[in-house]
Image 1 (cartoon, helix red, strand yellow):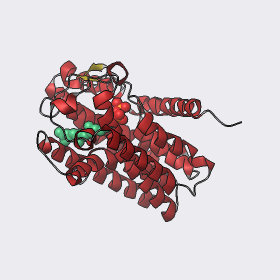
Image 2 (image 1 turned 180 degrees about the vertical axis):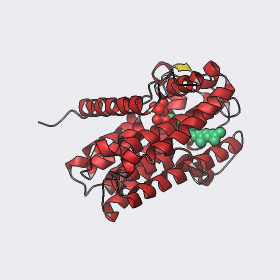
Image 3 (image 1 turned 135 degrees about the vertical axis):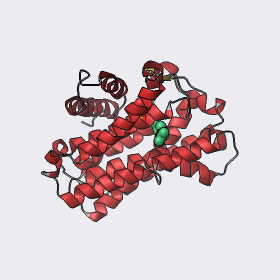
Length: 302
Ligand code: GRG
């Protein structure tokens, strides 16, 4: 009997999310540390109901090559710390100026701009602290761990997520070509997703062919993820998304639907997902979660 893909994926997400949430809870200092406001602020955003897609992809890539997910949990969780920092800063008045995220007031609306900036800074810094923790360096060969930390730093930094964000901000209200659009999407969102998948493979001692295939899978689903995000910003359900829709068009953001229309955007996202599945076609049943996640990325409602 075949598995019902929706039920199988829901169960997979639920199991992995629990593992990640419990690990984050263990790694992050409690709110009664001094000064409490910073711990309150970073926990407020970190435990606000995010989907945990980046750490889940990291663990799914590890499983696809027979890796041990317990060992790599700190790296998977670090990806969520970096992601949460980027959302806090992205919501600031100087950036997207959003009041709601994940159905709750944004960090700066609750803790003030100063604390929101610092909570983002603390999360970004803690990610690298956690990835270089002695417990991890004892269990993973240092050249593999350093290669992953290096790749994640590049994906988050001025050649990755920050570069995408800079061009995104600078392009608001302007007419740009598809090269600029793809630069924004592949850097702002795609680079961290690709790095998440690659990290799971490298830390599980995959061979070069497998690592390259999984990194390519990550690149394809990363771009598809941002196109799906653009589509949801136009026609998503406000309740399910936990934030308002239509903000991209109000701000004159460079998006797939604005540049190519809905139908072409949907087709492009589906094509990327098919390509992602195709580059891992030689992997066995252990890569099934990666295939399901790729399909979910364009069908998701939040
Ligand atoms: C350095 C000041 C400063 C700011 C940096 C780099 C940056 C700000 C922002 C990154 C850009 C960004 C937020 C891209 C959006 C990516 C995206 C699709 C976010 C939504 O991700 P989901 O759907 O969110 O995984 P959840 O809520 O599920 O975690």
